[in-house]
Image 1 (tube, helix red, strand yellow):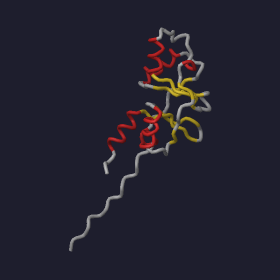
Image 2 (cartoon, one colour):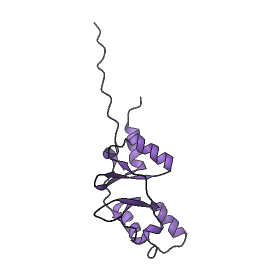
Image 3 (spheres, helix red, strand yellow):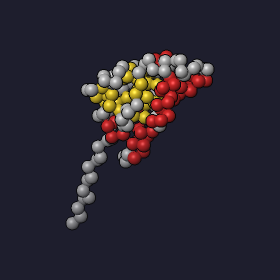
Image 4 (cartoon, one colour):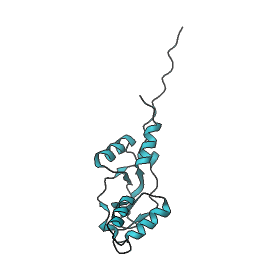
Length: 142
């Protein structure tokens, strides 16, 4: 008597909550770009979420290392230029229960490398393209 092997339950697809990093460092639009560059360097971050204020933590934009590089290449003084002048406004956001696959699709469609993750209380984390790639590469193919 041959029994069919037991079917393994398919693993639950990973979500943003599984791969996100807490957005420990945020900036405000009126901060100087130099402050963003300093925070990125010391937090080992490639992007910071621009929030309305530290209490509400509503994402207004993103500032990335690419924004800083462009400003430097354009000979802008990072001590004088404001983050609001460099940031990407109204970023696409996802929630903690967004699937990693859906996050990847948003990144591809919008040419993004970072997505803020929001909950009822505002910003809860950030997902980077490396987080998404790592999760997708660890997924079983089928």
